[in-house]
Length: 196
Image (cartoon, rainbow, N blue to C red; front, side):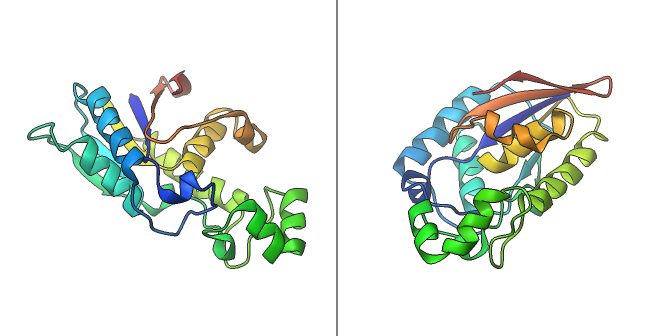
């Protein structure tokens, strides 16, 4: 099974290096062009299912990517498990702003990035567990090609899941806005075909 991972196009918050997950924002002009480029890349692949985050930036990316593809027949499934990390009260703030407004919490975050929960947010461990639950369901599918339109953090958590559930590997990967990567699941084994 081929699983294509598409990160949403760039937003204003991405450009400004703000932390945001639950905050709903739209693509900027760069993000719109990135979505169009991704659509050109994916245009000859026949998908049976498309899994998508609930966030507007992912919906917009999918719509733009496939707007000129014709009568595409695939099922679109929204899944909250592939929403970005909920940063709680850190949402919409830069690291500098977080450090200034939440100095104690920021230190705790730096000391234990996996276990720390931002005020009214979620921890990286909880984030990983919901992505893991999603991936366990993906393993049960019998499809040739599926597409997952999601967020950078989710894609990195997918890689962690694939590589022995090792959360420490999270910082070893980069995933750029509007880029497509390909992972495969064959004979009960995950592997990365390419990362872009």
